[in-house]
Length: 390
Ligand SMILES: *Cc1c(COP(=O)(O)O)cnc(C)c1O
Image 1 (spheres, helix red, strand yellow):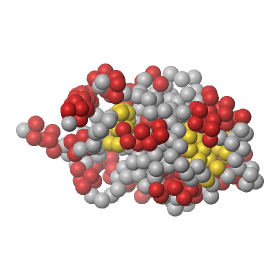
Image 2 (cartoon, protein in one colour; image 1 turned 90 degrees about the horizontal axis):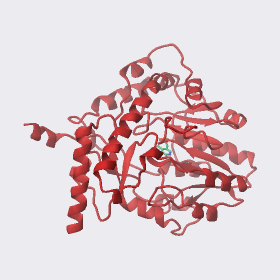
Image 3 (cartoon, protein in one colour; image 1 turned 120 degrees about the horizontal axis):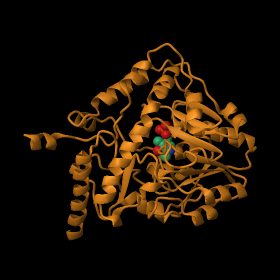
Image 4 (cartoon, protein in one colour; image 1 turned 180 degrees about the vertical axis):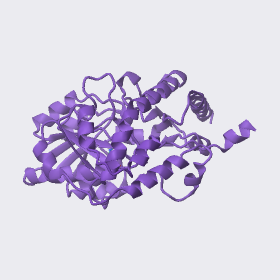
């Protein structure tokens, strides 16, 4: 019977797990100032909020473009990243330039970055994929040398690990997301922080007329359905959950006031969520062949997913049921819909292409317990052995 039930279970790839009290607080009339809560938590000086991270990135790029008087018209982004980063650049009427990533670490290939950066570069986006902390020193150097701004994309790396300074606080600007599958998955919202550019944040900021009840209800519904015995429902429906599309036509909205309260009320659970993710990652690290791994867990804050590199493997239904997913389907230069917006059109990012082909990610969220993590590790090992035999 148990085995039968287990075969029915669909483990959500990313659970929306925030306290019900936080969701309910949305309907509370007391206004909460999440900006100052976040500034305190991250120990940064300035912060603005909007409906999503992409909105803030787009608005920031517009502000920077205006400030530079149109002399710099391209933004240098990782060759393998969330398509909405590319969408923000395109929407701001700027060209997308890419630098490569090293498939053995998922970090920036610094030589490639040095080749790509120029006096045309308005800003460089550096990322911490899955919450694995990328070394930034060399990127900061190159960016400063060329007089560009550094935007640290910490959408996947929210939290304080053992580092002196939290990810997102090292660049000129730091970007955070509170959408589904992010470290604090409130169901929407983004933040942009800075220590040194209050003036730019001031002209970038955007207000909202919305109360935010609708978002709160969606968040509550997602949370309710993210259970192993219910999750097959959204999986079967054409909701496009977890789909990656390049869409520069997104709405530009501020953050509804009520969402701020949900964020503020959920923030205290962030450290616990991250600890859980680290615990699950440690099990994967121990049980999975080190040759398949890219993560050194000392370098991670949130580890929203655990990356493994699998060769010749197809994502089958069983892996999907266990919450295993490939990430972005293509590297930025290989994505046809992005091509018209690219500055350097050739296949300049072989590392990113390799990552797009081989990268699989294992779930680490709070719905995955130690037993599940062991089962998933065994499944990965078995899949790899089978693929070797085929
Ligand atoms: C999710 C994500 C974004 C965009 O965040 P939204 O709030 O969905 O706009 C940007 N960069 C990275 C690396 C992301 O994972």
